[in-house]
Amino acid sequence: MINIFLGAPGTGKGTVSYLLKKNCNYKHLSTGNIFRNITKRNTQIAKKVRDILKKGELVDDQLTFKVLLEDLEKYNLKKDNIILDGYPRNINQAEILLEYFNRHYKDLKISVINFKLPESVIIERLTNRLICPKCGKSYHKIFFELKPQKEWYCDDDGTKLIQREDDKIKSIKKRLEIYNKETKPLIKYFTNRDILINVDVNDSSEEVYKKVFEKCQN
Ligand code: ADP
Image (tube, rainbow, N blue to C red; front, side, top):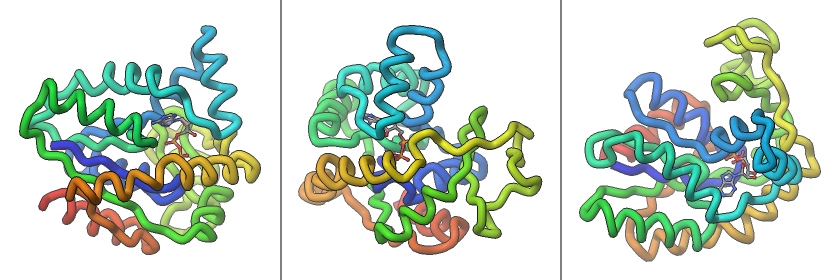
């Protein structure tokens, strides 16, 4: 089964994915994490991706689908519970994905969870976000429930936490602008296909996790 997590940056898609992976063995595919790993390499593509991410822009659709597919094909799409976090991010990517599923996996169950959160909360969350560069887990500098146990270190693997390059206010504004222009139209696109479920995510991560888990089961 495929669960597409749709929502602006900072709405908690990664945090909920982490909990579903840890507690329920969901498979988490995040194109953002895939690209951040690519940027660590010493190649021309890595350099190109690094520049795009830093500016908060989108990587081109062809390369994005290629890297997604490399990971997706490791799983059993009919049996595994798969989360697509950050893909698709525009109508063209959605068409590419649905066309691929239609061709290779007829009758695959697909649902889209739309993470809804006011923009003011998003900006506050992103400017205070810290991530583990090794496992990708997100933390928050101030929220008690999302603070690391030891300040600046990952609870799971002890790696020193960092602020993402694109969590600076200029890139955040750009990412939100792109979300509104390119990604938001997907709400209507998936509503028209009757597979979209809205979830109000202005709540603690534990509550949001419970709400999303329930929707993923139906
Ligand atoms: P966000 O916190 O903005 O949701 P992600 O971690 O999902 O960030 O993605 C980080 C960056 O990776 C994006 O700003 C973009 O540059 C790139 N990226 C991730 N997913 C896609 C995609 N589906 N298409 C194009 N670019 C993507």
